[in-house]
Length: 264
Image (tube, rainbow, N blue to C red):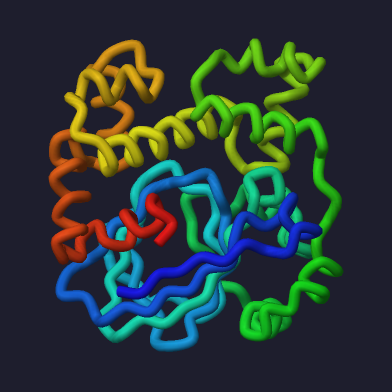
């Protein structure tokens, strides 16, 4: 599997986290992907993989996709070699892609939406990495929500949401409404996902005990970390650590999730 990330021009960094490409052989079994608090625009240059629906059935994806905010694991199965390119948005820019605004963002929660043929302009932007055309399509950002996401990212989701609202000079209700409109998640949901990602990095990078890992990730105790990881991934911390290690050794089940965690 070959996964790579590129930073956008500095003028686009408030909207775009990175551009990425992925080439991978056909899978013998499904791959898992975990929430990271970022929406993505994806173009499959080769045969699209299948995605498992809530009913357990496998459905073939379209070539051009919008991946909304997820709150649970996604399972993909590439039955043919995969070649795709993606644009990962900054969290506060989740509703900033032209016509794909706040209403579409809410409809995309826990969904990967097939985009219609009329959205082919996005395919051209991705194919040509046309940053100028992309900038023309982007909508203004809510500066307070940009700051809120930066604060939550900086503390890996640890800390009370009420305290965050106070830091920003907003009422709790205003923060919740504006955050959900811009990001597609509540502040609490986003914080939990950022803490999940911090925990995955720790499980992947360190050999610390699970209790120490939970403490470093800001959990009150190991049991709390265990519940969050089971909710988001369906696996216990011990099984996740073994699976991430297996990905380093060639097991493909978590190879894609591990690549996204590692950025390579």
